Image 1 (cartoon, helix red, strand yellow):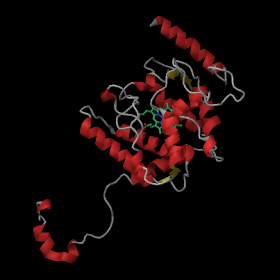
Image 2 (cartoon, helix red, strand yellow):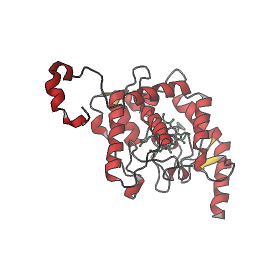
Image 3 (spheres, protein in one colour):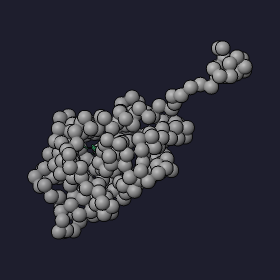
Image 4 (cartoon, helix red, strand yellow):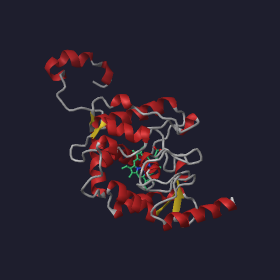
Length: 268
Ligand code: HEM
């Protein structure tokens, strides 16, 4: 335990000091993608895994995330502004239970129902032994351009699946807020924040390959991404998670006949 703490403290010092982290082997481009090695830890957080795989975060066994390296990674890779990056770090620091912690590790993020939650878009629930097993509701992304509706449908589907089959299913109001941000994330990082869409191949690459899709023509947004952008996209997706539709009820046209037979409502 003591050894782990000292070791982690050393890693924190190293990771804060160096903008480029030790990698499995040298590459000309310090941000070239390298898959996690057998001793490296990756979690169920696609973006943090990508940042580690591309050398924006330490890529080693205990990937240590400090505020300076989180801000450098998110501003340098996907053009988040520093205050958004800093806020994301602050929201996650509870993962490290030490008082006044200044870092967390990918492993610490994995504690169930702290930040990690049920019904995620790419992994099965913690109840089913390993919450690292892929379970991506790709069948709901029904066109090459994935829309807010499709994203919302896949979110709802995962919640229903969890609620039906996971006896420990938990999904608090806080988890809902995080979940909406996560469902919005592919649009924010790789898609069109005005149309609320993202190409399906970029989504799939994000979730399944955990690498920046530069070979698919992607590059970081030219405009810096702010908290307002994240909120706007998350709200747009939240809005279409509502399962009610608009439109006229035909009941009025069919008059009393339908009304009388309508025993489902019970009270009419
Ligand atoms: C300090 C920065 C960040 C931290 C600490 C963080 C942490 C986490 C955690 C703990 C989860 C797991 C939730 C679950 O159980 O499903 C998660 C999921 C997710 N994160 Fe992040 N994240 C960060 C930044 C980002 C960014 C910048 C993006 C993309 C723009 C992103 C995209 C996602 C997505 C899409 C998921 C959902 C994965 C799924 O549903 O399977 N994250 N993140």
